[in-house]
Length: 262
Length: 241
View 1 (cartoon, helix red, strand yellow):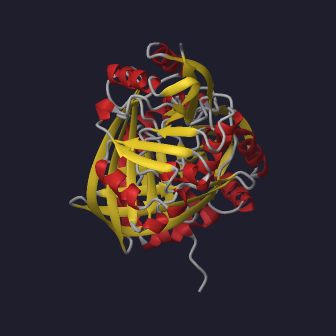
View 2 (view 1 turned 180 degrees about the vertical axis):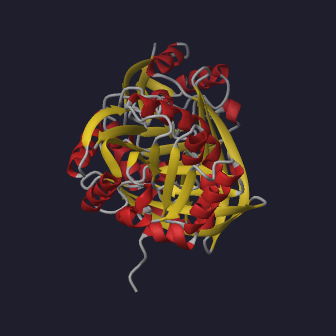
């Protein structure tokens, strides 16, 4: 039996682990949604516009944007995340303006109801490209392009390869409630691929009980590569930023935002 | 641990040996290694032909090291203990060609203690002899935010949490030790240390106040230039007199 792709391991087989990561990040969505609102305005997305957020996780951006008046559609590979997103949207009173669907980025047009398109904007947040090979990334960008109207935009928020090269930290630790996430990172400079090992434990007193080990492999991009990728995916690259505050791109910024116009 | 695995990393010994040879300190020279820890490098240098005296405050470590002296170097390697505030604690007439003070032996206590230690060392070096310090480079830790690292040694997994305070120059390291049981980690013990890290200028100042003169500082044993990308400072000093 061929080994499952890590996304299936992490998001389908053991969604409860990454669900905890999403829940932990939920509060950060508030401010980031306000920042996204400013970016959307800058690129002429109208108030109340239609926006696609994929992958949406538990909707920490989409549900907030819906509260600001946008009509949001989210899609995610994980039925568990989608169901949680739907529940949270209901709790926040925006179930009518934020709907969530199960769907794979590589077949986004199959996941999103045709009646929801075309969108004024699409969002790809939290380093959600580069999980497969580069040709697949191009295909994914074309999927977004099919769903966004001419003149609409795509916002990609993703780790900055230049930062990783300059500030490479081979190991990481994060405590998420009673879950401990320990990461061993390897960067292959020839292929620009990260090969990481993520171990998740549950705290039991002072002990750490193992839950899951996943090898995470993904491609990281420098800004010029992302711009080229956008072009190949049917987008015109416009501005780029170092992060949600629209600061200038920098080698010292851990993340980058690129905006493509359809 | 079985005696067989208490070996110095050979590249550490080789790098130190080459560094000393470039200073004209060749096999046969008298070396003081203080504090020597569990004596791994001292054994390696004795095997390379140096006459080594190695001193450490840890009596248990020294007792274990003494038992493990390979027969072939028994006449070239002497272990001794001394209280930390009296290191190296040797007889007054002993003089060495070089004193090695490795593995960030400064900055563990107060600056006054460091100065007193360096002054005591100055009494044990022959005229024209050398002092070699191997310190952690403040600028490396100040310019890198690496809050976590883990290491595995056999079935032991060590988690290290680091924090650096630029105002005091103190690097705080906290360690949690686990035993790997299957893929679970069973907590065994914790420890921590606070190290005051120095810039080359700081080190030159301390040496100048304690009877030494800094004559060189590098980013590594191969005399790499000092940059913020080097984890260590290798410092060379001679007696000021």
